[in-house]
Amino acid sequence: MGLKGFVEGGIASIVAGCSTHPLDLIKVRMQLQGESLPNPNPNLRPALAFQPSASAASISIPAPPRPGPISVGLQILRSEGGAALFSGVSATVLRQTLYSTTRMGLYDALKTQWTSDQGSLPVHRKIVAGLLAGGIGAAVGNPADVAMVRMQADGRLPAAQRRNYRGVGDAITRMARQEGVLSLWRGSSLTVHRAMVVTASQLVTYDQAKEALVNGGARDGLGTHVTASFAAGFVAAVASNPIDVIKTRVMNMKPAYEGGPMPYEGAVDCFMKTVKAEGPMALYKGFVPTISRQGPFTIVLFVTLEQVRKLFKEF
Image 1: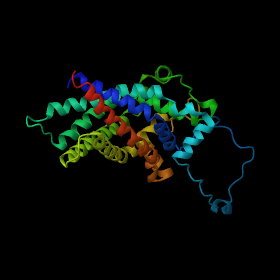
Image 2 (image 1 turned 90 degrees about the horizontal axis):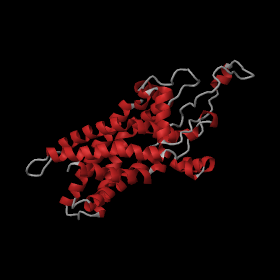
Image 3 (image 1 turned 90 degrees about the vertical axis):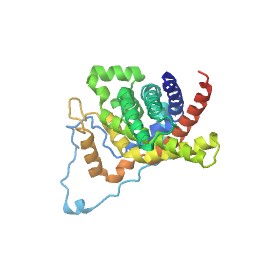
Image 4 (image 1 turned 60 degrees about the vertical axis):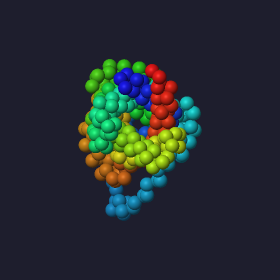
């Protein structure tokens, strides 16, 4: 397979990432719902402050219902314009170039290396190949991942607090200069764990589903590829959503005021505070747009990959 597997996987991933970017942005905004925004004036107190009385304390005000993906999308269109749905797309391109090219190419290389002379590869070896490929790819692509999350989340902040990165290059340069080079790997442990889960569940499920369909008499064509892709996308979304929520929050966090402490000390602290404040189902925030994005992304990814493989077959 050699370099060709990396090129094929990279092309397919970039096409899939760019075409589903608005769904990914909506997912990120929904995952940040319920999280307190930074207070720019932490020492400013209200003009009138009253001590809560027992009767006042007993009054419970129901929380307003949280908007769904369509409402979030329409809200972005109304307040930020249509171009906002592609905020951070330059970071998506870089992320797919670094992360997905690495994971797809490595997965294929490991499968080729480990396949027996009889042409069979046990499912447990496919899972190990997916875990290794995903982890290495995530470590390589983490700076672009941090930049993408921040650029996608920027529009939800008050205008005075927005980072206003001009592009992925500006985002990475400013992060390195203002927060240190290590900030580019903020949340990297989460990124690596998520990528291992996604790659193992997504690629292995696709391989197994496609194999089962073809062995069951289905033709190795578009219908089989789409069906196997949807199964892979669903499994990957269910497995990765909790890690994705924590990853998004850790990567996007900023101090409440200049020089102040970060809201989370790390992934475990973020997990505990999120569950305590918002309940365990907060870990599945953004699941609808996650599956809405993961399904089309995986379909576009594998259908494009199959077509690219046909084009590159002679090389």
